[in-house]
Every structure is written in C-alpha cells, then in structure tokens.
Image 1 (tube, rainbow, N blue to C red):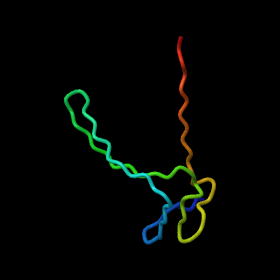
Image 2: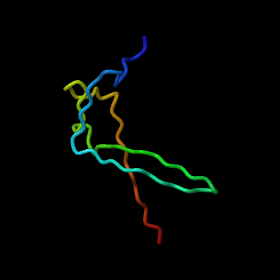
Image 3: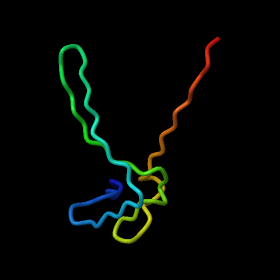
Image 4: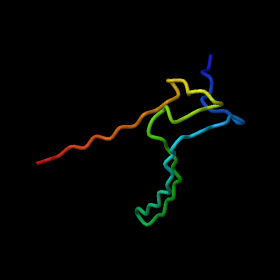
Length: 68
C-alpha cells in the first residue's frame, strides 16, 4: 500500500516566516535560475491547519570543517 502524499492539490499550506530567494547561477557557459522557498523548522509549516507527519518532513544540515 502506498503512503499518503504529504501535500495534495487543493490543500491549504501555511508557512510561518518563510525564506524566499531566487538562485541565479552561471556554470560552464549555461545559465540556471531556481526559485527556493524554505522554513527553518518543521513547526513553521501547517497543511490544512495540521502539522505535517514526521515522515513527510526533511531537515537539512550543513557542516563546516576547518582545515589547517
């Protein structure tokens, strides 16, 4: 049995304090443009006035290493 979709057509999505930007990148003589919208924490998302299920939430992390 397939898992239910996190967001379906017609759902109402609320993002608290969204971060929106347009990434404009040139690489190897080609131009790419991406629109990005994100929130910092899963608690900043509501789908049909409910929190998303934990298995539908993805968290990103960045690690920096200092090389001597």
